Length: 384
Ligand code: GLA
Image 1 (spheres, rainbow, N blue to C red):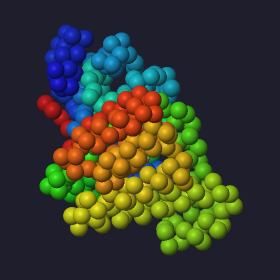
Image 2 (image 1 turned 90 degrees about the vertical axis):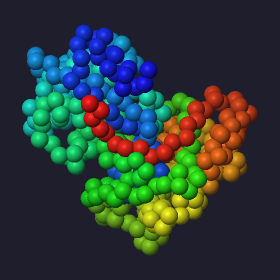
Image 3 (image 1 turned 90 degrees about the horizontal axis):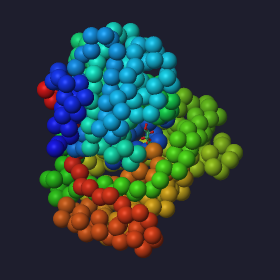
């Protein structure tokens, strides 16, 4: 059964009636621009064909009940619980967080019954959290007839995650999931939230993006993410700028000379050079030179590995094996300490690259990776 049918079937079985509608939101990968979003910088993610679907109908008692195929135990909460960050926890916190963020923004949020099904793997760094937030947000906006233009959705969904769930993430994931467009990568300026849809015609170029799920356990990912963010913010303060976005590659050496510890210098160098790599990638894509972006992807990986120090052995192994097997470029995507690698490959070489990564994993005794070829897909939508 496909994911939309599973959501509908789950809804019928759980609530004994038909849903009023179904809303779908994709996962994402980030082509390039890692740990730049919370530094007011640039990112270039795209939405995946894997989606989370929410089947929903209004509930007259004003309460929310949410069931997920991944859990089976429904979670119910009212306005009081939603108004208190932390009261609802686990996966349902992403749902309660959206209710909270909408209420905090002054909306009269309807009660709802929701059933969630998902093809976005949880814990793989493909933004299953942004997918559920965005699908729920779209459902509640429609069911409640709320006056909330889609341009404001990413910040709202991000607030759910930052302030209700308690994860200090940036604006990239929700933007990709909400604003993604098929056949395009989303060039986002995280300071102004301006976007440009950049044609990313993999098919036309005979290319594919191979996504490799490293299956590495997320070791200390949350604490390390928060630590990276903090050191970037402290560096910006030391340099007297609003955010590291305000340092560009021409001013990098001068900025580094003003920082007195080596670790901070490396963190800053990653962010500043990564912003430039996003701009360079965008320029190549605008010129239709998709294949030539490969070295930028690989350079991004080296920077994450050596300067930002957010990779793990499984991830580095996947990147090296993909490159040895002929990928044009490869890099970790997402927050780090596990998650996925993406590799830019000839479409007809994708299977061979995947096999080479699987073999390299076996040699090192790692749990076998997951592999999947993807094309950029569209963002959140109502299915009917
Ligand atoms: C996670 C966060 C994003 C972003 C990336 C790193 O995916 O949710 O906001 O910071 O890490 O680029």
